[in-house]
Image 1 (cartoon, one colour):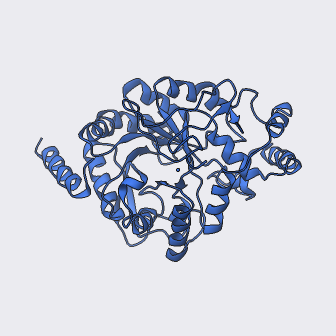
Image 2: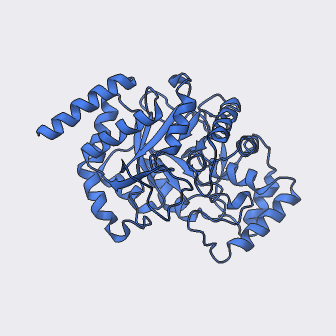
Image 3: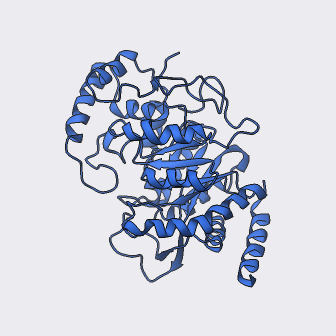
Length: 380
């Protein structure tokens, strides 16, 4: 694996050429897959075995949306304290993006991680948007007090090299382990139906470039970070990705399509899944905010109330159930709930250690609140 200086040198050479022409790791051992029950379950197997595709080494990671001022402002001191708490609790997978706070999340993650040994953690970031200095950020973004940058989409080969180099500069770390092609999806309001045109650009640019970077040892893995299944499934037809970050696609409230269609296709190719928004962006932790659009779909409030009542009857909280449920399928390598405060990250980590009675899952299935064949955590 190359260090940052080697990467920047290679990136500069590549750009010139273009212009000229650690549930924390389970009790079975760090990197082990949590046993599950259900049609989609498999026995525990070690991750990152020779010849296998790279996977994060802890079952719970930390997502970088909140630290990038998603939904509300977070101070530098609070972000630092949250990251320190995550590390102390055993979290060793950190996910960020240039998009989160327009560079703010990466800078905050890097401020913490640059003093840690890069061999002790896994870091992922994303490509697809190039940031440029501006007087102020664009209006009406998800980010509160975002950094003063504008952005443009670029899924070309040169755009990917530029994006990764920019991320390394913001992070100030020696390397990036996983790179996700970000938000190339029909739900991206900037793209809409034109997302396929951007996808075609990625097929010619980002995908072969990231494959080359993986082969050169600049990164360990690449994939797509998207909120819909279509681009992930289409990517399987034209490339050999390692891992996907699938947000808004697998949670207690929404998981049937992923179980029946997306997960089997990925698992067949040995590709693992990082589950983003396992708490529906806070909804399953009690917030009246569902995912990233602000609208709570019909029936979801009733479902949450019924699930919460069953959880209380079994002596657990819904956040605990939601996180463990999202981590249960064998194809899932990690779940990455966000956290704005040390208390939130401690609660998330603790939730992965709770023994949930089998009768709780049986009750959810009996009431039709989760799919009959959904994998669930095993106490074995």
